[in-house]
Image 1: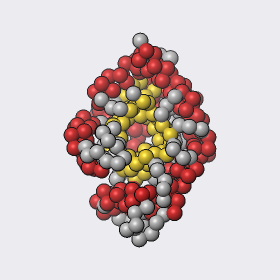
Image 2: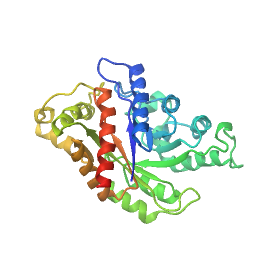
Image 3: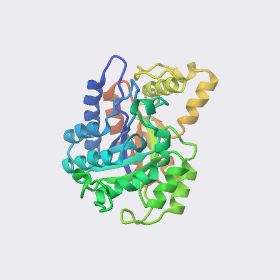
Length: 330
């Protein structure tokens, strides 16, 4: 089973966007060196702690910092955009980094209700057009003569198109179009099992894909001990609690005993949303990843997560891959 990396390009307290982008390049290099299959960046807007909003620009930066790892969106929130523009962006990326580009598409806005006003677009209505826009985007890469305007950079480009989802809707669409499907279980685990079953049941083979292909996301923080990993992961936990309470911000430093300090309701919310997690020493992480792989039957897992010290995330990737390989070889 392949392992990949999802990076939100976190901006830490006391840091800025430039530092976050430099850290992202080093993380991608570490992922490539460790043997991860792909590195994805997610589109988010208006969040002080996330620097990946200009996703295609970030991917160009990552592409130049690496040599062979696949790079892509996890995902582009298509209702925010015109398919022509995304075709141009990812066609250009495919020309710059041939054979390495993934284009995973989601229909969420990637921000709160202010996004529509900021984009001067009815993103909720655009979300209803998501299936049509996915097909139009595919047509751009295929050079469909029925298009009113062909995106020059897209013609002949072959980025791997995925559907990204956290509900049954995305599973149905991916199955209908015969596309690979990635489930965002790292923060929305509730419909994971039902969505994967539906996708596999309804899958229609296509020119792109002959059989279902599933990737599931899991939060991973590996360290030398379980206690150290829990401490490192407390930065991520703080960010999530702050987001859910309406006070998001930059990624904070770790706090010892953070979860124990939370009221019962907040702790229950956090535990529920973090069901798909592997946090601990290498053996702990490998065992939990193996259990999650058995549960999902996924063809590939993508590891999410963030640490206040970027070097600890790079070390986490190294420890995780080494532990998983050791377990497979045993």
